[in-house]
Length: 263
Ligand SMILES: C[S@@+](CC[C@H](N)C(=O)[O-])C[C@H]1O[C@@H](n2cnc3c(N)ncnc32)[C@H](O)[C@@H]1O
Image 1: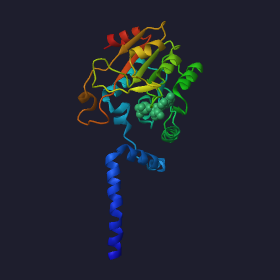
Image 2: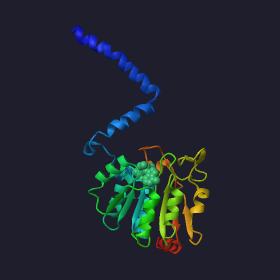
Image 3: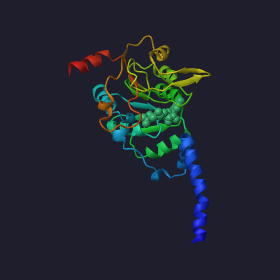
Image 4: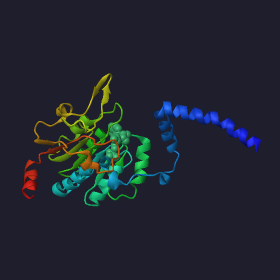
């Protein structure tokens, strides 16, 4: 009995030390936990319900994408930055087998986990590639048909491939493009990322940043979200709140007018 008590008492200082480290450096703790998580078999990992968490949990954005698919009938869906497939699987549900879905992920662990999660999703093709190379290949192989939909969401740390992605798709005659994590003018409640893209150079995604990558021959229409967190999440406030994005329609003015006229 005394022996057990002694062992327990010996463990206490370690426990206190653990609490102190956790309090002082939570990111260290979560990073360590993230590393250990890699050892858990995929089938034992827990994933969010994609019906609610696709497109970072924003139901207005999910409804918008659903309407875009109904109205514009895109010929393929492309996502850059698969991460863990939350949005990819939501797109797969929306599209069923009507159109191919392409997604790419640069990180090995995320790619392998996503490939495992997607193995039963019909029509979804995932590749471990950097997004500009991926988009370039799809365009050159004419795999996307005449009117693809893009969700551009590939970024991490100093990796800011958006301009190259836009250049890669700029030869397409028509496209619907949603760029995630974009600055929404006069709406600071829509969060966005700040990237260090060159030594000491910091910037966010905004119209000035993307304009050099657009095709001067094309007719672009841009739309920003204008709704509240309550509309996006209801009372289930999830994730980090609203995230900004931009909707870019490429050479689709008359199709949009027709859709408006049809009500
Ligand atoms: C914000 S997460 C994507 C979230 C995902 N689209 C979703 O909605 O669930 C960004 C992902 O892009 C990946 N990434 C970063 N740079 C990339 C690149 N150049 N090409 C492809 N993927 C990239 C990161 O590894 C990360 O998994």
